[in-house]
Image 1 (cartoon, rainbow, N blue to C red):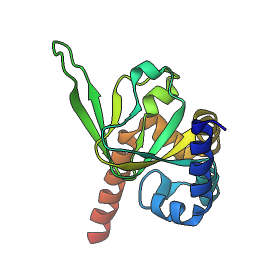
Image 2: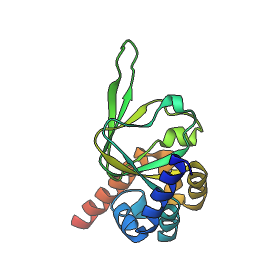
Image 3: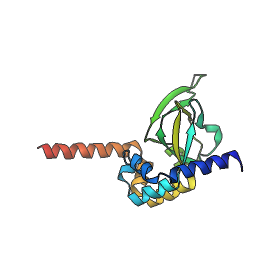
Image 4: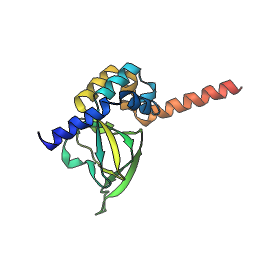
Length: 169
């Protein structure tokens, strides 16, 4: 058995042994907190858990089209990219627990434009691309989030603020 296959099987077993705990964790973060529980359970059951040591590359442009949807369960991920006129990469963003990546590359069926590095030891839930596509078709909440990203979250925050303002009047 290859090392990669052994890691995949171990990562899959780790998730399946704690589906409820993983779902409870994800319910603390959008869009998972608004998804139907059956869709969330389906997603979790199709994920594997993978450890990345600090400094290790998770995905990078030269890997080709992205093959997994990642959800950071623990740790920190840094996005690094060489910007125009510079020779060394610069950190362009950081991803913390509960956040996911790389939506634009998955939807565009392309490589990521940024290298994603473990900023510290981290664990990622990984959903294979084919299962990402299936979840995209199953869950309207997930599809909206994937297509609209942060703007859909801002809409939700705005709606909650308006509701709270109306209630206080």
